[in-house]
Length: 96
Image (cartoon, rainbow, N blue to C red; front, side, top):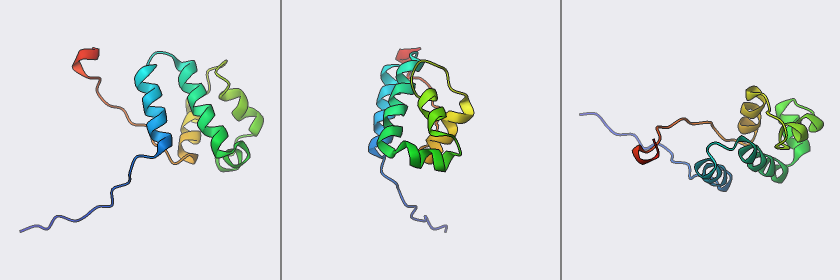
C-alpha cells in the first residue's frame, strides 16, 4: 500500500490574487496588466527589484509604464523576483 505524503500548501499571496483578478477582468488589455504589475513592483521596491532582476531601475520604470510593450523575458524576470509564476489555464467554456 502506498503512502500519501503531505505536501506543503502555499496560500496564494495578495500579490498573486491582485494580478489574477486584473488578468481575469482585463484579459485583452495588456497596458492594464502591465500597470498592475508595475504597481506590485513599486510596492516591492524598484531598487530591490532592479538588483534581483539585473535590470536597471530606469528600464523597469519604462517597461512597467503601460506605454510600451516590455519584452516577455523582462516580465518573466519581474514575476520571478516577486516570487510569482506564470500559469496558463483553459478559459471557462462560457468565455469561449
